[in-house]
Image (cartoon, rainbow, N blue to C red; front, side, top):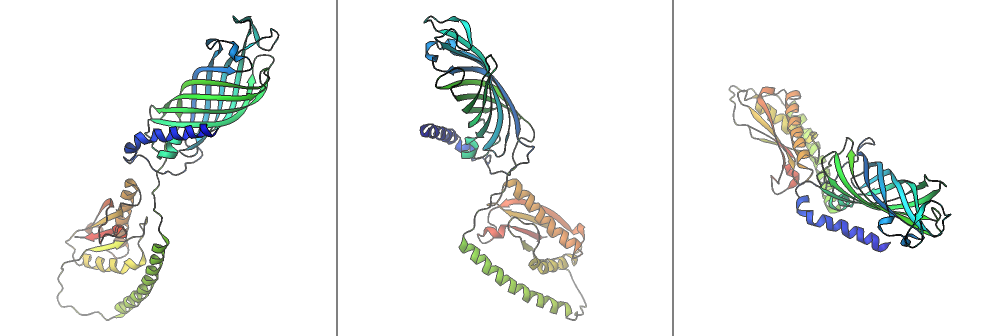
Length: 380
């Protein structure tokens, strides 16, 4: 048993190793768990199977081969773990020294043993393990997948006298992707029984089938951004920084109250001039604007309104090291729109003076600090 498990693991790793460079092409990623109605499939296949009983060695190899049919319905709960309900069956053939044994259909082999043949069905439930996705990461365009399974069920003989026996199932599905909806399957399966179909000891059945699988919509999985773990030392530094910012925020509030209560100066002549760019910093994965940024945005908005003939651009950015490219593109757009909307709705900047742009995930923009790439920049 241990040797069998080791073989499966080594085979799965060997499948992954030649494809490592291709997997690095942004195709493998972590995923969100889909709803219950997603990732269902139905499969069917035809092939051959062979019965292993008390006297199976008394018949020739070709005489023991029987037709086989596979039908299954199942669901993948994650890219690596799935369940299915399956039917395997059609016929089985054996040999016996007694003419009155069950399932003897007449005729003998050259050694005098009587030919047996009966109709059989194996109904079982299986746990599927897609080791390609578990070891190499999910890739919806992967051509080959290595999927072992184990399960249990009821083995029934349609031929009289009918029998019902418990069976343990195990096998390997070699899955080849044909399209987003269709896969080609080559399945190797085994069935272990005890004292079934007139036997006196453990019995088994092995089979090989070739078939197809149709995957119902929704078929794929949604990627989630990968957020790296932060060491405790960095968390302590962030806590200290937050406490420091709280003190600065209280001081800024007092300064803001004093500035608002200060009597306005009479300016005889006022000319529009240069408006410095504004950098608004966001928290990781967020597009909402913290209160500490409001005063700077208010000052920038005032400068823009004093230059009514100029158009300014609000450009959003995200940290390239966090999240996928698609996620960062959406996040940078939301950040730019948040700054634009605040200026227009809160501080009265004409919408015609603001344009929105977004660049997605970028490398460190300021002082080799990834946190300073999570920004929106307003400039002429």
